[in-house]
Image (cartoon, rainbow, N blue to C red; front, side, top):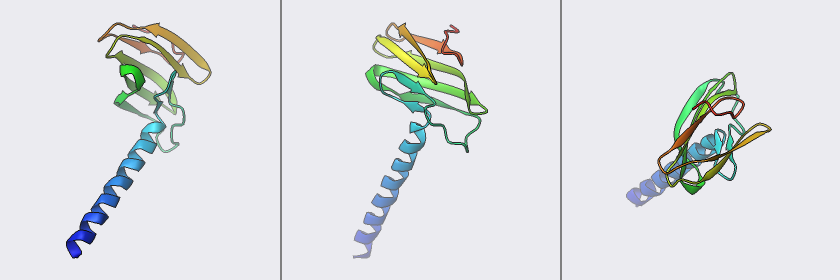
Length: 112
């Protein structure tokens, strides 16, 4: 009986951890169309970065921020599709090739 209770407890701990992780990542990227960059960044994370966040339609997002503001974002396309990215009130659209990507600044302008 103890082993069964331990397995149940471990399952709940893992599920809780995954929920917290998903909630935290949701503050950095909202993976819908358009891809929202830093939609609700926690105040406890004034400076940081995330890499490899999977968005819909085969996009992968890397983001850097300082003082709660976007400094750089990279959107990679696995499949080669059109993409919209949004930061604050600014939105931009891009056509990306398979394996291609775009580097954005804080104004959602293309750097590369």
